[in-house]
Length: 136
Image (tube, rainbow, N blue to C red):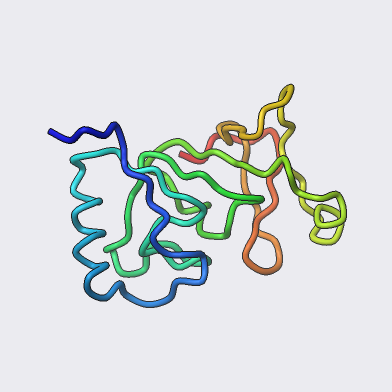
């Protein structure tokens, strides 16, 4: 038994490319064993930011916490709950990239994206639009 309720995956950044090499390949295998729920930050480790889990060795987390805006690969995420932390996005960035982000009730800093759909934007982020079924 583990003394933890979950594992936080923030091993690779969104610029990760290729297949994980030692020692990270075995770390990902251990995290992906299903013994603990995994919460991935921004992009699940082992995933390409645009095209998802290309090698089949990336993590399939219980939750994905996107920062600022979901990345393109988030449209392929179906293994759990998806949250967005991005209330802090400056209005100039929202305007520059044409982001449509969900409302954040009250003073909340995180919102669950169930009920929101993603349509990809230029670059690495996606815009979020209301009214469509949940992602996963």
